[in-house]
Length: 237
Image 1 (cartoon, rainbow, N blue to C red):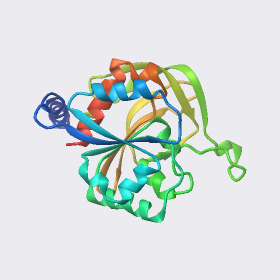
Image 2: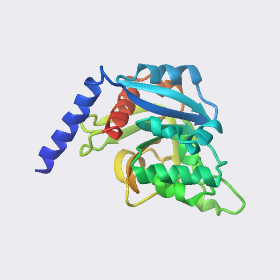
Image 3: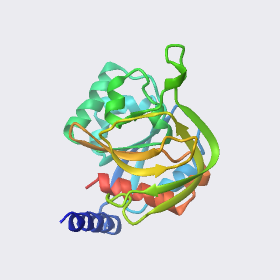
Image 4: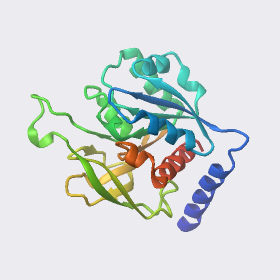
């Protein structure tokens, strides 16, 4: 029965990816707080099948979320690395999760909101920045420009059938991951935490995190675009 359920879920995602000619999935795409290869980044999102986006930079993105703009979108996608968040903006995020709004977090969004504990619970993990208040053994690390070899979970619609992946990207080490997440992507890179992609459940929301996505060398690959497309269509179900 489990195999039949998995097959059904996979076929449903494939059908959604192929069947969006009449109605595209609308995503709220959030950036800010970290430099990135903007041309290649937006070219990548322009190429995703069955998906349209509206871009919001921080801090305007959080203000828009607090004003209810996120209600217009099917999935919220975050590629920001932001720290400033007001109490009303926190309440707006939590309200969305209670309503079941799905979220996709990418790469350095894991570093956001270092001083808002609820964000770690929502995302399912946290990159701990260096600080005098944080012991060295608890601080997270990073390494640029390395080959990352990845094994994808075969029991989840986002990654089933993908098996192995390889990207020239950035790895994060010693970051925290909740024991309650569903693993999607793992690596054995010595400078990386082993789990680099997962699904988390928070309130009524489905939340996916993918650590990969540092620059154009990943954005331009067919495999990364396929992974994002799969994740967005899965979250929009």
